[in-house]
Length: 262
Image (cartoon, rainbow, N blue to C red):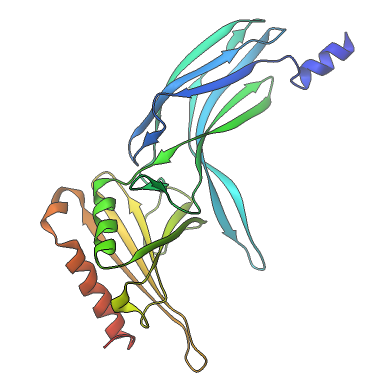
């Protein structure tokens, strides 16, 4: 009897959880829908709650080291307490809000190099939390984000990779404790003036804050320099702006001001 209780405490013969997404594709500010299927094991248990949360990999910089770790966000409780008898099946429909600042994972049908995103289901039994495997999720850009990305491509920039960094951008309101950087190889017209361009979106329901960082690496006799720019894209007036021309003008102005472009 003691052995059986020990096995139960370790989760042996306990309930199993399967999450089924109606559609694994979404956009920031949208929703993920599906069902959580909980199946009873060989003994009855009291479930404290079932919760869902998105998970991505973030880079963390400390004083003397840098490492990557999983970061959960957008967590939501799908169910309160209930009794699950042995062999019983219990279905929980859910609708999870995807935060507006959720990092993008897919562009034009392709996964961004360096990006991971998944949905994790959490089941708590007697104060013991079991976090299940990740169900893959694909996050596609909103129209405003897509328009800016297309503008950079038309200027000749090329995607390199993306990552998510823990922290906050100075002067920008963020609701999540991290932000995404999408890195580009410079367009031919900027080669020599730009080593790398990094783009960050901080998106809300009505507008998107766009942060651009220009990296100019130093040479043997020159010092590397960075330039930062920030502007707001209004979703309602998105189609009234020539974005390739707007971005080209900002880049040229910023580089010329710093003596990196003539």
